[in-house]
Length: 460
Ligand SMILES: C[S@@+](CC[C@H](N)C(=O)[O-])C[C@H]1O[C@@H](n2cnc3c(N)ncnc32)[C@H](O)[C@@H]1O
Image 1 (cartoon, rainbow, N blue to C red):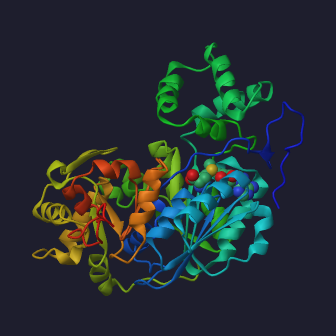
Image 2: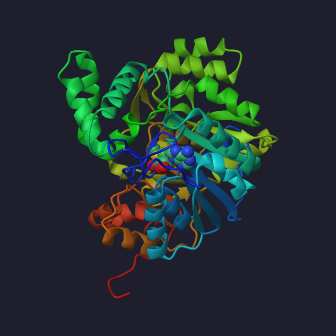
Image 3: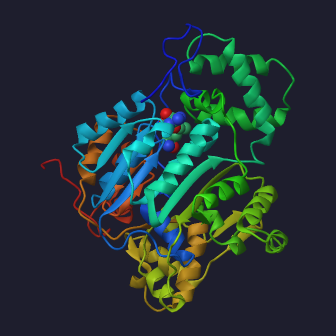
């Protein structure tokens, strides 16, 4: 049951256990919560992923918002069953409208608070995800969310959790406290109160110019509802990574690594003195905390696996890694074989990287389709391309209703930043598909030759 303070005094905002509930959160899509992304992150670290081939699997999204990302993922993976849990009725209704309009049969949404959701008994999940929830909810709801993830996952299942963390948010912590306090005396919706509170703060010299230089571009770029949700939650509390790792370890979930592409290989992203300092850390929790302190991390996406889980035999690992499919995010001709890291510019202009880019320029395919190189060269090159965010791990093509779903998104003017393909869901606005030429559509696996499916002609 959802309990709200709906009937409270007119100058009180509607909340769910302190969470702002008068304004829906914007729709979102995140690549790093996609099953092939998680699978690559596990397998690259030698851990057996929860799925095998095109077998059925179960995926649960805790705090799914309006479930846009969950729904696009479900369309792209018809062999999976997808479940979203969110306490805000408007979110669940909005998601259900899209599910109904698109005629999708493999997603179920539940309107429920985490503290009461145990009775849903969604056990045996292969994947549980929670993006952008931990830092914004009460300590009770946070503990309930972690309990649900641990109890609903099957052994070997993966939990991906994205959250605001320290030390990055330290400088803004005071700003959030002041805004949430000012908003209590303001009037109107949470969006209006955020704007009023921010204007009040702006007239003061409490915060240094660096805070405004950071915040103003975000105000231009992100929708107003994001700020209402980020700044007006009464329980807003970023976490230290070590605390999250410890809380999940107590619940039987082992930390695997960060889902962020830049953190797969520290030798490709961290200066040597940082890496040296990390080798002195005796546990995963200490290591991650030290790395966050070194790099001033704001936000993490961590992958955990439920005990007991299985490792892949070392001798079999390279062949398995080569079977993974990849997509190139830029046209092959635009790829620069270098990227900027905390350690400086990293160059990876070599024959294997060029061969991968050239092959993926034609459409998604596995590394095993690229001949003439030792497995280690291909794997090292894909690591660098992944760290540079030039490639995305995908599935082999399957039969999906991606075309009609993407068409519906275009008709509805959805600009939520995600589309479905026969290989998985991708971070692209549906509207921008119209602007793409044949070569780009092929590279993205949206037409034959890209290894996927027919693009519908106007006649059909
Ligand atoms: C910041 S939004 C994240 C939505 C989505 N995961 C995304 O990344 O776009 C946090 C979500 O948690 C939900 N939520 C907040 N408190 C909750 C609670 N106690 N139980 C269940 N859901 C809750 C909110 O309704 C909201 O949709």
